[in-house]
Structures are given as C-alpha cells and as structure tokens.
Length: 195
Image (cartoon, rainbow, N blue to C red; front, top):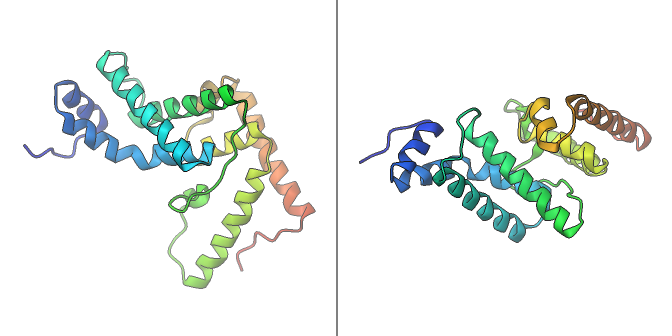
C-alpha cells in the first residue's frame, strides 16, 4: 500500500494502528529540523545524535501509551521534548548551551532572502556569520530566546511556557538580546550592511 501525503495527525493514527511506515514518514518529515535544534544547543555531533535518538524513543513511548494530545502541532511538541532533553543534559552536566551554525543549517536563513548573484550571497553569508558570532556572545537566557524564536519558530507564549518564565520575561530577554547585539555592533564597529 502506497501512503498518500498524510498530515502528521493522520500519520500518528496510522502508526498507532500498526503501520510502522507511518512513523518512519513522520520521522523523515521532521528529523532535520529537530536534530538541528538539538545540535544548536549542544554543539557536539555525537551528543546531538544521542539526544535525538532519546527524543524519538520518548515520542514513540508517549504515542504508544496514548498520552499524546492533539492540541498542538506534532513538530512543536517534538521540539519541546528535544529542548527539554537538552536542558536536562545541561543540568546534569552543569553546562550552559551555546549557539552555533551547522553546515546544513544557518539560524539566520529564516530571513528568507530571495535569490541573488554570487557576490550578494557572499556578502549575506559574511553578515550572517557576524550576527551568529554576536548571538553566541549573548548571555545564555537571551541567546536561548533568540534561537527558539528564530530557529524553532516558536511564539513568545510557547517560549515562555517552555523556558518556564512569563511572556513578559521572554519578550524582555529578546529585547535585551537585540539591544546587546546593537551595542556590540556599535562598539566593535561591525558593518552589517549589505553593499
């Protein structure tokens, strides 16, 4: 039987009905985004792969126990699990995450720029690199909000719930992150202009 393009919820129903291929499709649909979020937090390929596997074991376990509720989107739920597992890892090891780009993903690609000539793309790439370096210098709480907002595409309400702070605190952290980035740009006289 050939699977038709089903939405995530339909794939979950098929999987719970015994169709393992439905889960495989669900995994293939979202694995890059979830893995990349994990990697951005842990900055270690082997560790990211371990946490990624743990995330999907937890997802399978939750689905099989019938504890998955259909309120939100599957991918946002899965990304919350991934985030929580990263936080748990850092709590156990008393380390704070740092944000880094990967070769396959750039946090600032979410700016969705149109196709340009090679020179313009090089300039944009250099600009993105400068911004990534600035983001990495932010205090951990501010950096976390920037990553969750711009990579995980989460709303401030979702970020607040995930990080267990008020919406105003999440908004404040983003505001201070932007202020700090602007300050660093001015102090270091970094040109972010695309000529």
